[in-house]
Length: 171
Image (cartoon, rainbow, N blue to C red):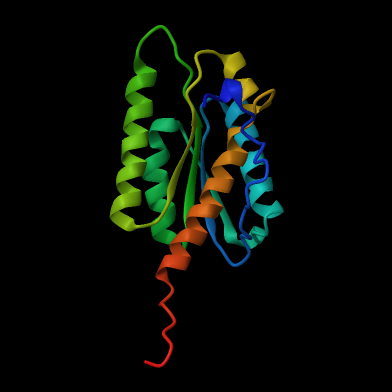
């Protein structure tokens, strides 16, 4: 379902786990800062709303969306994190730069997730214009930062639940 058909901040009746005891990294791009600052605010507030302790939320800013993966790797190497959230915005322009950047970032985050077994969340807007970005950064379609935070919480809880040894009876 496209975000034009759904509010990114409306989780309906979906159960969102408690984030207490979990540690998160948020890496945000400075490029398109009006948008990324709104994504960051939504992400941070959603983590706290669902139980994350502010001292367990580690945030850094990188120059642009293309730098999100290396910033995420650097932060993950220096902090014990349960999930890493990357926030950016690449607006389609006159060239196809957006396709190269978005695909590169998505692939890099996916690879880091697979190799490390730790969730690296793709919270990057890929709009056609500034209005679409504003609509998805706290506007009429909600905030992609909220969605990225909820995804991080769910994946971190899933990872922890799978890492817990099975309880056996009688053996």
